Image (cartoon, rainbow, N blue to C red):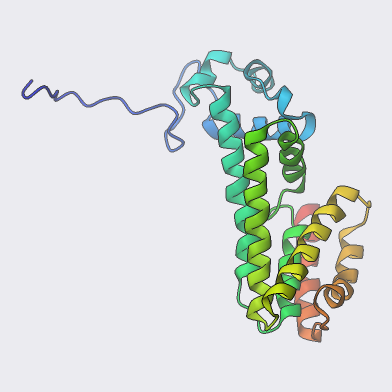
Length: 229
């Protein structure tokens, strides 16, 4: 040893998501813990996201949890980070995508709400419910909602809407979509897809072209076919 340093290479942290799980008692990965925690969050609420509960569902010892997370709080923070990196980021990406018309831009945005692989509606509901009980989560949710609306406002502004009108149309579009999902209308994807072009007129004052409607319909059909496999 020289200058207070050691030549021994320190062991990597076991909560590194890139690490493979250890053999022996560690039978699940960090992603497994996150996936089951997210399932419980969506189905039962944040109060049931408990280490022992998750371990029982995974069929492993509770101690294995601590190879990947420092604490339950660490896991909850990871769930919030996942929600922001998926739902929020994906919606913003779709709102920011190039489009020749505002009608085409809105139809492209609708993909988030008809494709569960893009936007997890159940997870969004669960985080909103969680925010009612936790001030920190409420602040994160407020920031996320603001970022989503801002992305939609920029989308309208790119297509010539004045700033105030772009902001109001963005709010109408966003909060209608959130409320639409919360209402749980028991509407099929086919029904929602068919009505999409009419909603576009209401949101934008513009009609989608035949080509834009065809692209929207084909995407929805592909989502249905994939989910039936």
